[in-house]
Image (cartoon, rainbow, N blue to C red):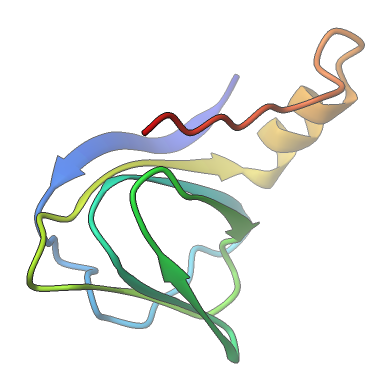
Length: 101
C-alpha cells in the first residue's frame, strides 16, 4: 500500500494549531492521549484519548490540543488512490476502530 506519511508523536509539531491541507490525501488521526478541539472545514469537534478522526485531507483543518495535557497521536496520511485500493479489496470491506481506556 502506498502512503505518504505515518508517525507517532508526542507534543506539538510544526502543524499544530495551524490551518493546512493535504491535497489528494486522506488523513487518519488517532488520539492516544490528550484533549482539545479539531477544526475540520467549518466544523469544530472536541477530542479526547482514544478518538479517531478519518477525513479528506484537502479539507482545511487544524488541531488545537489543550495545554494542560500531553498531546499524543498516531497519524496516517494516505494517497487517495491507495485508500481506494484498500476499500475495494475483497478482504478489506470493513475498517474497525476500537478505543480502549
